[in-house]
Length: 183
Image (cartoon, rainbow, N blue to C red; front, top):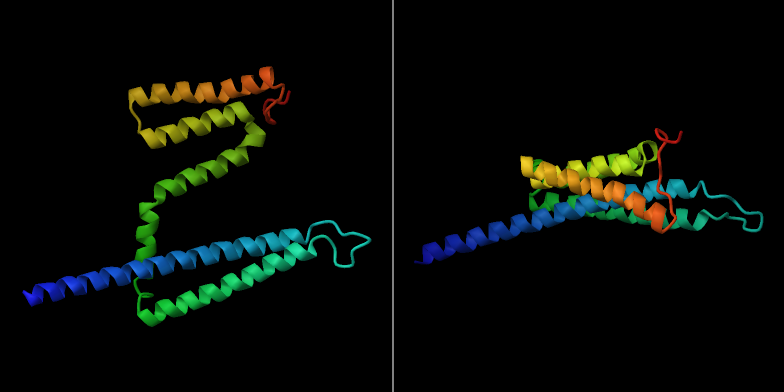
């Protein structure tokens, strides 16, 4: 009876340690993402216009804040890697990352589609880009069948062309027509 309780406790401890390792790995990823974002924003802040009245310029404070944030993220990432190495969970990190990406591949695909949509929007215009984006995302979410294709076509048509008409006719706000249709 005691042997079964010991096995259960050992399994619980292993699961708890694996859960902590996954949490630490997620923190490591967030430190890297925020650190890279801070470096990018610090570089972009240097492009802010300078002023004749300020000796440091308008971009000096944002550059300082983002640079400090990037350094703090780097320190935190290094500490997390050291903690993972001490606990011995660094060896299975590659497999854990692959599994994590596999489970979340659908979310990454939708995010990639959103990035493509935002990149295509100035060229294709609101109606065409939104129609294609909504149609593809709805089919990704609902699956492809005759019923879902018809529903997705109707919904994409209503939300792309309908919103364009609503904004143009009611609010007198014209959404981007795109370079292709700029006539």
